[in-house]
Length: 339
Image (tube, rainbow, N blue to C red; front, side, top):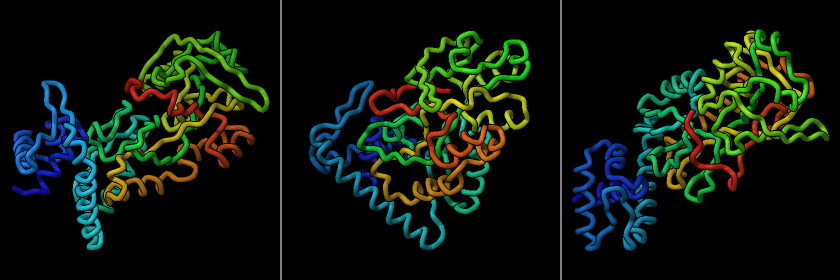
């Protein structure tokens, strides 16, 4: 019996609530995980899990055993990674979840450069904005916009995400451009369906504050579909600048209501507290932070698009005139639909 391998299997099953997920994370078959758990239960002379056809939960003894085992696995993994890093060869697998808006068109080049710097680190990337708990889903780190509110997770802000109401020139030629938020009510709107505020929007301009409900002709859990809806002249939509920035520069889309501010949103790196000292996670998060720190490149390209007041706010604060609201821990659902 290899005690460490058995304890490692125990920790992975406890975190993911699944023998199959633990096997996938460790690169072995489910039968190997089952065997290791049985060996460990025999060794400690007590069942560690309650098993049913649908769920795997810790027994009372397993819950008492888990915290120290998780810390032990983390320490050994970190020591191994630090030794490899000292030799210039950090290695192993990183399982990452990334928002589609950030992944498509932006992350690929950064991952290429990260892989060139650390060729022995393999990365398994899932592209989805389903708000997943990295512990439950078996990710080492998730890049998303919804805060978890969980004490078992670390949330590290990376950069602000700005959004714009925008439309194609051909649509605005036909329907006219809105001058104030209330004007949106007479337009064909495409609205992202995943935000917990649903149809409610809050706009601010100086001392003026407008709280309005915007009914949508098109609702979608995909910002890329809404992007296409706007490009083809379907109507007005609100998009992250990391999705629509290039088309605004090329004048395929026209920014609207840029003098009105919306509460800010941030991209977060979310990872388990047990990964706090994990070298591979730290290397990736710090690489992404450095790569996109300050004003992201897609917003730099829009400096001439916004009026001077909007530019100064964007450079001086994460709360820009074209950001979307960041849900609070109390209001944000952990289950928005995927884009």
